[in-house]
Image 1 (cartoon, one colour):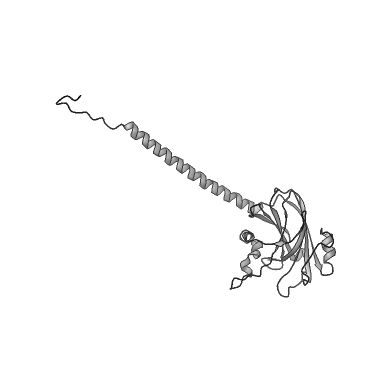
Image 2 (tube, one colour):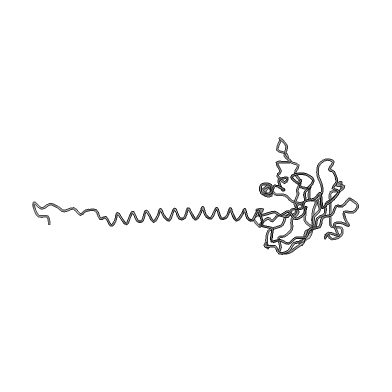
Amino acid sequence: MQICGERRRHRPPIREDVCDNAAVRRAVIASVVAAAVLVVAGVVLLRVQREREWADGGDRLTVHVEVSLATQDTFEDVAVRLGAPPRTATRLHSASQSVVVRVRWSASAHSDGSFQLLALDGRVTPPRPLAADGGWNSEGATGSNWAGAYETLAQHYDWLAGVAEANYTDVNGMTNFPTAAVDAPATEAGTATAWFRQWGDGPIPFADAKRDIVVALSYVDDGGEVRWARRIFG
């Protein structure tokens, strides 16, 4: 009940509520900043890890590589000697020379994905990829392949700059780049044999495999992303 002549008293603002709200705002801002810092740190760490993987992802792998040159007449014998079962290796009939490669590896850190085997002409700079005709691995016969994702190899390795399709694309956007890779399952240990040839008009035959040929092995994960490549011969 209000008494006549008595003024109603007004309660002053409660400063504790104001302080609590300010503290909540500061906590929210701090949380947002901390989360942003963690995101940025995570991105930077992932980038550093990927750069290290590009640089030395295949260093742990132990590899033994054999490369031989074969004519039309000696191709079958060379392919069998390097691991292909008799009468299973097929090649472009018109090719006068083939490059047959066998790679044996162990101590792989990978149990899924695939290894991609490439051979290149080391007489030019950057080395020019050869066309792959086929191969043989633990799962049997395999053909040649090439995916757009492999283009990233040219961005990370100077000696693989020659695999960029732009090098072989004309003004109309047409490319004559061949399927240049032969795949094998990325097991802890294994063997793959592949045969390659030069392409284009009037190629000059190779004279010395050790001097003329470069062999690369790259790892592609199950998602189709190229993780690293290693120069294993030449």
